[in-house]
Each structure stands twice: as structure tokens, then as C-alpha cells.
Image 1 (cartoon, rainbow, N blue to C red):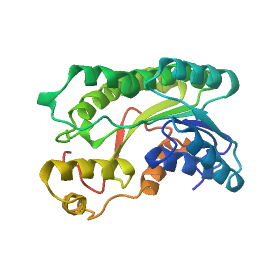
Image 2 (cartoon, helix red, strand yellow):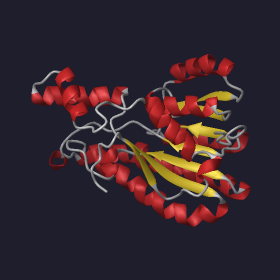
Image 3 (tube, rainbow, N blue to C red):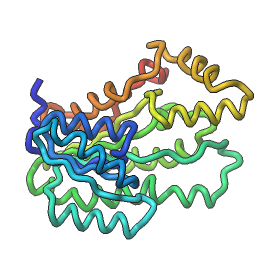
Image 4 (cartoon, rainbow, N blue to C red):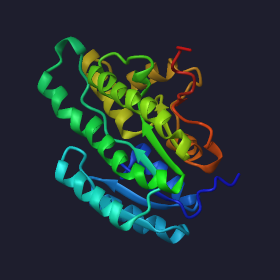
Amino acid sequence: MDLGLNGKTAFVLGASGGLGGAIAETLAGEGANVVLAGRNTEVLEATVARLQPQVSGKLTAMPVDLADVASVDTAVAALTADHQIDIVVLNGGGPKPGPMAQLDTEDLLSQVRPMVESPIRIATALLPGMRERKWGRILTILSSGVVQPIPNLGLSNTLRLSLVGWMKTLSAEVAGDGVTINGLIPGRIHTARVDQLNLAAAKRTGKTPQEVAAASRATIPAGRYGDPQEFADAAAFLCSSKAGYITGTSLRVDGGLVRVL
């Protein structure tokens, strides 16, 4: 299937690895120009060097720290001046685990900027160009905690829901301009983040990380963790021309993990 991404330009946050890296690589493989953004410039540049000979589109590495206002503003200025961004993938790391009853409000405030304010700031700045061209895709990488709260991930459950409200409201405002805004919800996709959470659970329960991982997989109807490529393929579709009539919704890629309707 031709996804109609050849020649489109995508800006992918958190592209130095994990889900963001898989999405960036998949979009590039579909012919898109991709700006890979993240905090680790060295990894981003190495990724660009590895991928560029294999793809037809232009790849660019751009350092962005979502916790730093100046860094975000610098990136936005560069993107609006030098790039015609058609696709924005809002993706970032999750906060530290912990129970809601023991929430430190300083931890909450420190995560509002990287998890909520900066993604919205970037999307809002790039949205006018999409509306003028009558084509655009904004995809927010969420968490299964937005539909079924995850125990011991209180901060993530709370802040990612803010993006769902923003996404749903904005999608209705810009649908008539050919811009779609959707969310993509990972279940347990095997990334470093999943390993990190398993290690935290192991320390908390006195089990080994291997035991925690086995118990985790047992709760998934598919019987396994997802592969980042499976998640990236779903992302590429939602960013494609083929998905022009899908907006204001969130797709779960979870192997049946989430049991709510």
C-alpha cells in the first residue's frame, strides 16, 4: 500500500530510540523527509548517518529538550523558518513511577512542561502552515494509562490525559482544514522504558526482572510484548494520506492488554 508519504516532511520527537526512533525510521522508509529530534544529539546524528543511504528523503538531526523553554523555542524557530512540516509526532519519555497518594507536587510541576506544555507549544506553532496547505497530521504518543490507569504510574496517568483533552478539542477545530489529530496508545511494547519499569517493579516486590517480565507477558492476550516496528507501522498509517478521515481518536496497539471497551 502506498501511504502517500513520499515528499512529506515529518518532525518526530524522541527519535533517538524506542518508539520515536522506530517511527522516524519507518516514515523515512516510506519516502518522507524526517527531522529527528531529541536530547541526545550524538545518537540522532548517528541514526541519520546510518539511515540516509537507505532512504530517498532528507534526514536531519535536531537537538530538542522538552524541559527547556529556550531549546523548544529555538527548534520551533528553525522549523517554521526552514521546513514545511506536514507531520508532527509528539513523543517523549515518561515520568518516574510512584503511587498517587505519595505524589510530590514539585515532581508534578516539573513534568508539566516536558509532557504537556512543550508538545502543545510545538504543535501549535506548526499548525498554521498545515491549515494553509490543507493537509497535516499531528500524532500524539500516549500510554494505556489514559484509558485504564496503570498502578504506580500516577504522574503519567494524570499528565497524559491532559494531552487527550487537548487533542480531542483541537481535532474538531481543524478537521475542515484537512488536518487530523490522533493519539496512539502503546501497550507493552518492548523498549528500554518497559525494561526500566520492570526493574522498578522488581525492586519494589523483591522479584527478579525476569519474573516481573514473565508475569507481565502473562497478562497480555497475545502472550508477548509488542515489537516497536508493529507500533511504528500503525503510526505511519495514521500519519498517511490513507487516514484522512480518522481524527480525534486514539488507537490502541496493545495485543489485547487493555480490557475496557
